[in-house]
Amino acid sequence: KLSDRLATVANYIPKGSRIADIGSDHAYLPCHMVKKGAVRYAIAGEVAEGPYQSALKQVQLEGLTESIVVRKGDGLEVIEAGEVECITIAGMGGTLITSILEAGKDKLVNVERLILQPNVGAHAIRRWLSEHHWKLVSESILKEDGKIYEVLVAQNGIGEAVDSDVDELELLFGPYLLKEKNEAFREKWELEKRNWQRILNQLEHAEQNDSTLEKKRELEKKLKMVKEVLS
Ligand code: SAM
Image (cartoon, rainbow, N blue to C red; front, side, top):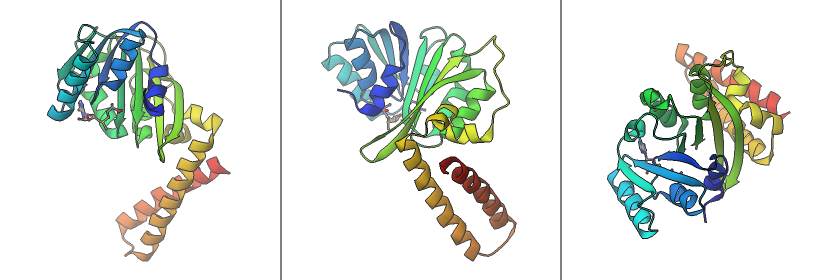
């Protein structure tokens, strides 16, 4: 059985598609999808030797070598343009996910859907998507084992006019998550708020130079936004 986090990612995978799961580790997600008959072909990509071996082993163990190919490589270099309709990248920081997308842009032309699950830094992904003709179509936030995770779903908008005039509040909090403001959302941002407040207090007591002043201004701006959202 998949974790709630990966099950949330799985729910957004279009039925019958071909997928690539980048940073697949044990390849649990592709194995689950193929076993269920929900996808017809999957690529599990891994950059690190240990997790690559784990993925190979898992796919063999489950007897899925005909439908799942495990490839070792950095980010999207393990896929050819046009091989898959959907890409999942889960369990990494938002900055790393963004850099994988940026480095592999050429591979994304025929990809229809991206399902991204950053552990932190979802705003970096939202910004990248909005700047690269990807339309955010859904978001989820959930808590599992004491940690809060976000899942972002984007559709390829090439050829369409995508609104690149994005709102700062929506970039940081997520347009769909902002509408719902569920319990996990409130908990995540309450924690961030306290964290930013603590850093700001420390800066108040530090030497006041240009760098501290700039950091303080940035934190004050974010605190103002988070207070507004949680009020
Ligand atoms: N996707 C699985 C999940 O969500 O449970 C595994 C997440 S695991 C914490 C992150 C995996 O990403 C690691 O196995 C790591 O080796 C892999 N990884 C990190 N950077 C990568 C990159 N540039 N290309 C491919 N895999 C990468």
